[in-house]
Structures are given as C-alpha cells and as structure tokens.
Length: 165
Image (spheres, rainbow, N blue to C red):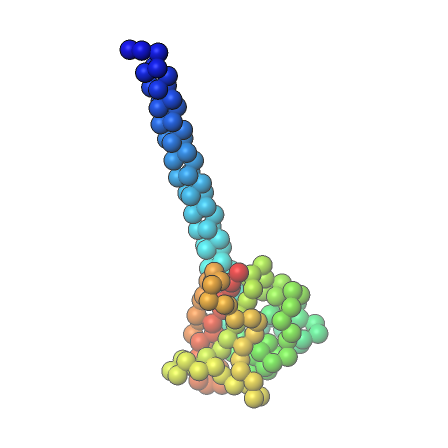
C-alpha cells in the first residue's frame, strides 16, 4: 500500500469517526431537550390540576376574602359548588397581575380560568361579564388544560384551567 493510500485511509477514518461522534451528540442533545420538555409538560399539568382543585374545593383564605385581602384564591362554598359572590370577585373584580397570579399554584405560568355551561359550552355570564380570568393562550403557546365539573347556581358547569407559556 502506498503512502498516498495510507493518508487517504486515515483521512477517511477520521471523517467516519467525526460523523459517528456528531451523530451521537445530536441524539443526546435531542433526548435531553425531549426530557426537559416532558418535565415541563408534567409540571404544568400537575399545577393546572392543583389550581383547579384549589378553586373548586376551597373557600380561599381568609374564608371571607375579598379583592383587597385575599391570601389564596378559592371560589367554592363546598366541594365542587361555586360560591356566586367569590366567582363574581374572581371573574369580574380581581385584576390579573403577577401578585394575583402568584396566589394560585400555577403562578409561574400564564393563567386562563373560565366557567362554562356543561351542556352548551358557553361561558357563564356574571353581572354582564363573561366568567373569564387571566389571559387566554395563543395558538402557538404550550398549554396544559384541566376541566373540572362544578355546580354554579344550580346548573352543571365546567371550571377550565389553562396554564401556558
């Protein structure tokens, strides 16, 4: 074998080794990204579930909270029955900002909460305003959504919680 052939074989070997190493790096980085994304998804769904549970099963703190003294938000009069006064405060009077968002378990994410009629899917109207709190997710955002059945003024409804980034 000539000197030129040996050099060509070495260059080819180095190139093949480089391609193998590059492929391994690409697979590893893709797996790390996928794992990080999975962890974010799991965290968001857990926090959305906790937010829905807190809203639909707790009266909040203090029990007779209002927009000025709320420590954590709960809108239930009893388990899965929504208190009309607290629903009015959440959906019509409580400003959506970093402070109020931090009163919910999913406060690290943008939050959208709505109260919908279970049979029609339409938003409930409270004193002329739709029962929505927060900012709805745009179509390109990552979102975790939880729907909880509740009763509001004797009608079956869904309390929807969406956390997104």
